[in-house]
Image (cartoon, rainbow, N blue to C red; front, side):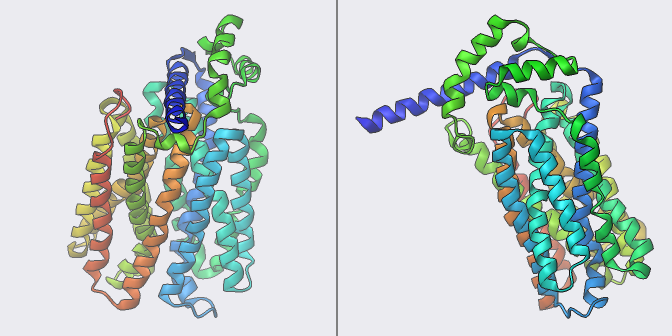
Length: 460
């Protein structure tokens, strides 16, 4: 009897949560363009800093191998990269869930401050152990940036521009990788790797400068029943929101939401009947996608060096990888807003797998750069589109939790990617098999995306 009553209560709560989410999504909102631009610009800058942090390790890897007295093996170098990603996994899960409980703004600023401080600590690390600790703690901050920036961007964007704006902020990831490659080509041979890590501490200044200009999410405030605060933010920003237009409408939403706010569990809601299949499919897709992304970002310079390319050419290939990722994600985001995310994301993962299979057999520089460019769109660029798909799929009450846990589970793949690359290098595997291993992850990601159940137009 108690079990039956409990089940009925859970179903009732799930229905109430769904109805509350629909009310928020259906509300008429007019956000001034200047507000959207401000939020997008700040989130882009934060993710650029994260992209710099993630890409820097792959760029300095040859210097860590030959330019220090740490005597690290290929497997140890892969393990160091994976330790950082372990911190990112914990950070993404924890920050995403906390963001749905205490707010997007504080989590984004705190996460950025933490990983920037740890970049400075890594630059000053006297031993490999200190370096690893700095990378793990910094990873906690890195993991918190994307879930909170993603939620803020989606919630301050017009519905028809959400995938595009998400892709736009995530170009910062690629721009950060490009910046690392350019600085490494010019500074690494003469100034060493520590200076590049020191530059990564600059976002501490950005946090101070942007703190007063970054608003809290209106959808978060409404979902948490903080109606007076939401009205104050809307008035300050000049936002017209139908749920806040009059006292009667706001009071109705407050009464309807009160039980949902008190009882809703953001993590548990990922596994209710309407979400469980999509949640599992998203987790598999993100796991495979990040395995592909981080494995390739970490080991591409070394793989191309093994194929006979000089160091400068290897870093130029990183520039190509990230440049095409940025441009491809913007185009893909615009297409996804019109045609749906499922088809775009799955096709791009398939293209990435095909390009990686062909790369070991490329003839000439031009063909190599074209294949690397396609891989950039289908790996880094496509991860941006997958993140937008996930963020749009979930309602405001658990949006950051949804993307945060997908990224957190995905970090297991990100941890595995560098380790797989290191193990293959340590074992002396033939060059093509390195690329085949990562291509297999791209194929698996495509199949997982295709398994996501369809939803309303514009979110598929």
